[in-house]
Amino acid sequence: MSDYLHNKSLGIPLSKLIGLVNQHKEALLNQYLSPLGMSSAQFKVLVAIHFYKMNSPAEISKYLNINCGSMTRMVDRLIKKSLIDKQSNPEDKRSVLLNLTIPGELLLEQCMETMNNDIGPMLIGDLSPQEVEQLSGLLKRLLP
Image (cartoon, rainbow, N blue to C red; front, side, top):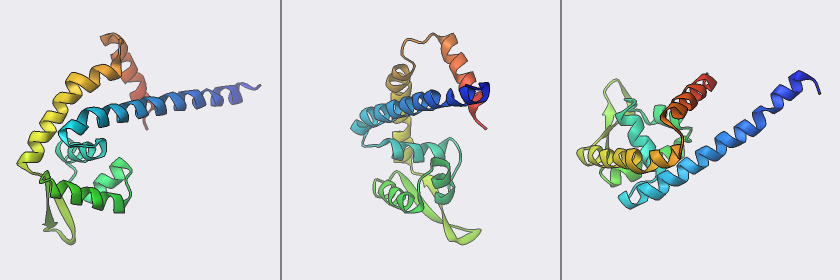
C-alpha cells in the first residue's frame, strides 16, 4: 500500500473516535441537564447567545449546524420557557435579535456549574491535567 493511501486511511478510525466522544458528550449533557429542564441543544443556544454574543437565529443555526425550521422551533420553546426574548432588529425589520432573560441567565449559570462539576470530569476521565492540555492542543490543531 502506498504511503498516501495508508496515511489517508488513518483518518477513518480517528473520525470514528471523535464521533464517539461527541456522542458520549451529548448523552452526558442530556442526562445531567434534563433535571434542570434543558436539552443539550437548548443549552448550546443559550451558550451561543451568552458566551459568543450571537443574537441572530440565522447566525446561531449556522454555528450549531441546525436547519432554520428546527431553530425556529427551538427559539419558540426557549421563549415559552421565558429563557430568551425576541425583539425586532432595528437595523433590519425582517430579522429578530435574541437575548437571554434573567431566568435564562440564572439557568445557564446552573448548567455551567453542572458542566464544571459533573460533565467535565466525566469527559476527561482519568486523564492528567497535562494530558488534557495536550489533547486540547492537538484537537485545536485539527480545526481549520
